[in-house]
Length: 114
Length: 111
Image (cartoon, rainbow over all chains, first blue to last red; front, side, top):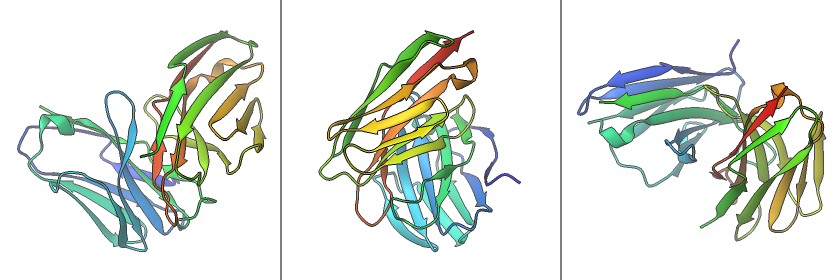
């Protein structure tokens, strides 16, 4: 009964490949996020969707494309992977966009590009 | 751009030895300061939200406080299970949650 689940947990791939990470939440939340945690452990927001609408789109390469088929799912597709894309990617969700709703994070997907 | 700086980067304590973690922030307007706990191989787990200077919140051995420029996470009589990385974050925009995180403090409690 994991609240925010991501698949896969580990992803090892070669430069130039295209890959996807899936995220699902069963909390009934309507806002979902993608964060990237780099080697120095900084967490940085990439995207946020509210009711399937993109509301935050940070300065990330357009090789990264989020897709939200419904409120419970937010997937991340990455084209033409590069070495610098290696990181841990976290999905999160919250009830609404207000300050009173904390983010619930998944356990991350560790992406390694060789 | 909002910035969040946490200190120290790492802290080792003996079980029962109380201490505090610091989170300094610069924001154009505070829209919430958040504390999270992150265990190895896991996602951050929410602890507290603070909204205004002077506010305090407690949970078991943890107490978070907030001033206009910084927040402290006080840990009283810690146990080994309190070992984790503690992350501080501020919300950068109005009408949505765009969290800016600090680099975290890695806390180790020795038995």
